[in-house]
Structure formats: structure tokens, C-alpha cells
Length: 251
Length: 204
Image (cartoon, rainbow over all chains, first blue to last red; front, side):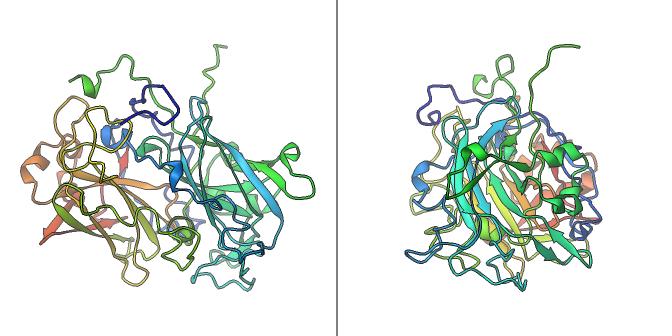
């Protein structure tokens, strides 16, 4: 396979850095009740990446539709738009070396401005917005950059404790260059007091780690009289240099 | 103080939650018209080389109840053991096979069905061949970090016996948790999140 389009770099084939599992939420976070019966209890089997983890699928920009990165319009009737606070979410996908990850597929989903998801399992009182579906996607550019337009999702109550509320958040699914980089996470919003009450966010042991999931309001990136902007960078596992390693292809 | 390594830390994972379908398989949950089809719903076409097989997978919680809101992704080599990926330097994989698929568990039965081909063998780092296998990645409400494991094939006994990853499993009684049973052209695989039959998950 050729390197990613527009690049004359050799494809990287090193194994990924060991994942720091103490930085992620543990499998069992009892205050998030659903984790109790869904958390593996035995130690995972550790091994250095093989080609099965080092490799990963590539998704080309050709698969994207014109409105995929515009949640305000991609489900709306012609001439109409979703209701809510108009925002732009933008940032970069980097790896732990600080290198931008080009060609990364990002898929995002969220509740509407009232905190209601378009899903048959969601019965919250807040109404559906007929012009809001709640999904979008983008592929990062040569520097790892991405951006999309949406409305700010509302907080909502959920059946965990008798009175638990999710902070406003957007779900992100990320593909890097290797399947071992596969990641799903959530983006929160600067200044939201509900973050520190949330059993899901607080499943992450280190406060500094939670803070890396809080997007910053960026007034310089707003569009005056149109939309505010939030910056959200995502970091994937870094990749070891394969310079001095025995290479699969060198057998 | 020594010099800084200037490293970043991986973004911490958060659960995919109960509404993962909205983002990853919107057509499946009734959000039509945004994407023409759900990504990863079809893995093979008429020209794909290799033996057609089906995978029938369930994910069971600590009470043995199938999850009805999970989502599974698979990643595998083509019939010749080549990955369709820039990291594959041994040759060009089958252009009619991406090797990646995605399927939500059925909302009533918890079953997840993939139609794919049986992968060829892929070399381990030292050049030995691994047994044919498919990488699985499982996310759901209540799963805080996506679970990584593999599906091996019951009719590959000889290759399985030589597989360097299966060989690393200290408690041999757990090896069968990674081997799918063949019935006709279908491989049946239950992933147990907990309990005596807990599947061997990977940290790789």
C-alpha cells in the first residue's frame, strides 16, 4: 500500500507505546453502576503489538458527504436548521510524540440542545428537534486538523443514581493508523460544573486526565454573529521508531 | 532536572454509552439520510477472494445475559494473510477486501452477525506464523475502555497449537475462550465479560 496521499513519508510500522492503563478509567467504576457486571475481572494478556495491532484500515476523504461535518444541517429539512447554541468544534488529532495524525477518521454523536438523543432508548422529557439527527464525521487533514459545526448539546438526567445528570458532552470515536490506537472518548465543555459530579467522567482517576477532555472556549476562532468555537485536541498512542528493530519485512 | 521528553499522554477513554448507534451506525437506529449506509456493514463483495464464512457473536455480562447495546468491530487479514493497510509491507492485499467491519448487537437477541472470509496466516514479530485469527474490539455502555481480543477458529487445531499468542496464556483452561466453534459455514463465538468463562482480553 502507498503512504497516505500527499505524503512522501515511508509508512510507519513500529509498535505503539504501551498504554498507561492507570490514566484511563479502570474497567470497574462502581459509581457508574453498569460497569459492575460488564467489567472484566481477570488480568488482561499483555504482549507487544503484532502486525494485527500495528496495521489498521484507511478511510479516504472520498467517503465524506458535503454535510457530514455540519450537524446543524445534515439532518435538517431544506432551508431549516437545528435549534440551539451554534458552535464550532475544532482541533487536532496528535499522537503521544506530539506528531499530527493525518487521515484519522473521527465520528461524533451527541444529544440535541435540550439534552435528548434521537434514539428509541431515550425517553427524556425534552423534545426531539425535527432538524437534528446528532451524528457527524470528519477525516483529519495533513496536520491532523479537523473541525465541525453543531449545536451545543444539553445536559440530561440518566438512570444511575436517583439524581445523576450528564454534563454537556460530545462522543468521539477515533481511528488512528493502527487498530491498537482505536479509541472512544467524550468531550466536555469548559466551565461546566456538572463534570465534577459525573460518575462517568470521575471514573477517570486523575483530575488532570479529566481536564484533557474539557474543550476550551476559543474566542479567536468564533465567527462573529454566528457561532462560538471550542478547541478539542485528541491524543492517540505514540508509535515506536522501528529504526533498530527487527523488521517483519526483513525476514 | 533532565531534558523533557516532550511527550503527550493518550486521551483517556470514556464509555461509548447507550447511544453509540447514533454515531457509528445511524441507519441501524433509524437516523436515515445522513450517510448512504452504515460504515463497515458490508465486508465482502462478489470479487473478494477467499472462503466465505459467517461470524455469530454475542457479548455476555456477569449474569450470562447478552448485551443488547454493544457494538463490535472486526479487523482481519485477507485470504493470503495480508492486511489492507499502509503498515503492510509484504505485498498488496485483496483490493476487494478492506478487512474491517462493524456491527451492533441485535436489540432483541444480542446477536451480532458478520459475513466475511477466513483470513490467512500472519507472521508474528519473529517470523513464525500466527494461526488465522480476527481481532475484535468491543464497546458498550458500562465498558470504560474498548475491549480488545481475538477470535480463532476451531477447525485450525494444528495452527492454534503453534500460535505464539495463544501459547502465552498461562492458564491453559482459558485458551478455549478465544476459539470460535464451527457449525456449517458459521463460527459461533461468545464473549464473556466476567465469570468462570471470562474471555481472555488483551493489553497490547
